[in-house]
Length: 96
Figure 1 (tube, rainbow, N blue to C red):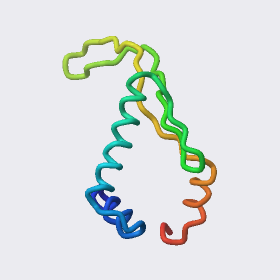
Figure 2 (cartoon, rainbow, N blue to C red; figure 1 turned 60 degrees about the vertical axis):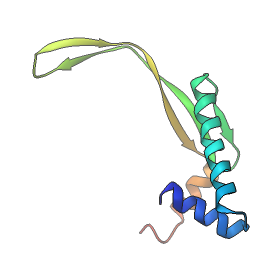
Figure 3 (cartoon, rainbow, N blue to C red; figure 1 turned 135 degrees about the vertical axis):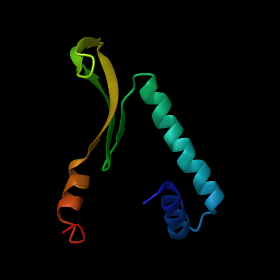
Figure 4 (cartoon, helix red, strand yellow; figure 1 turned 90 degrees about the vertical axis):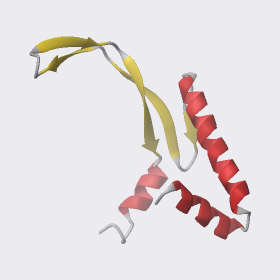
């Protein structure tokens, strides 16, 4: 399912114009990206959490040149679904 499919489905279910739904969806994604870039986590009750996970410094190998490089500690975005979300997926018949 693409972002366009999500916008179409929200528009059909709510009766709101597709252009307005698109603006809302784009604004949501923008808020999530900007908040996470500022180091904030986002918690959506019943859906899940968008969190920044810290990756420790490590030494990686470049196999073709046989050299070692240091990768500094950094943060990566992550999504952790809520228990309700996980249960809904586990109990879904269509995935089997």
